[in-house]
Length: 400
Image (tube, rainbow, N blue to C red; front, side, top):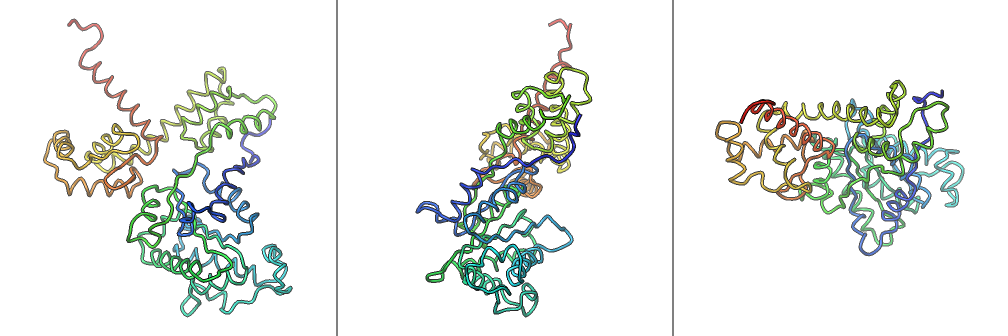
């Protein structure tokens, strides 16, 4: 049998990438807000970074854009600002050096074999005395005569530090300098992606944020077409055990539409003696429960009030719960804990839960569970707990 753990071909989301690239580079009259910036959010490990690298960046480049990509999760020892400046310097260096693949894309601009010449020192960008990002991007767009797209992955890591906030404000200033320039030959387009839904959404909606007024949208998770592709890939391996397409898709949903977890489930399936259609749902349910327990433990570590608030959000409207600070809610929290709770305590706990990426702010005063997968696991856990309590209260065989 072939090795299931070997890296397989990449599943491409070409149409999704093309549609997104077209909205960024060729917006219609109703989409021009994208020039203020776009923030794309989605839960962890659902394929966002793979999509950016394998599909969106090639789609943007095929439409003529120059793309600069920075991942703020790539090296946690470096500050967000240094990672952004480093990505900018790398791109500028490739444009200023002879014979690079990137430079070849712009050979029609009569720049000569030596590459672009900039009116600032490339290796000083981001350093004291170096050119500002406004100066860099203004000259870059003027020289390459096309749109420049700056993608910052895990953009929420720029928040909370002076260094990170400063680079965001510097990028906003650069955006304004380029995009408001009369007869600009291109635009500076900013795309921030992240796995912390509330923080990423706040970057586009809160007035205090540099990119207030930008577009905030959700990343579309992989679906049934990915499962079909995955199954077709694996069917080429002699002797492999696979469930039906429907059960594989249901298993994929059970593990939160995370490709890595689906792969883990399929690997575990190979050592199970049962019929794959019997064993696979059990494996996925077990993996889902284990993953959910980690998330649930993080909620419970915040204390009893956090668990009670979270339970209220879980059992509220799936699109968001608005009554977390109502008189009835405060009274309910106090009754369940057995001591008085006030609004400032609840507000403080809600803020901590948002920071922990447990819940997110849908809109003003409306909160939802950050990960639907955890919401489902919490509901299942509560159902089991209720059943156990009922059995303890009324054991089988007890006479009424």
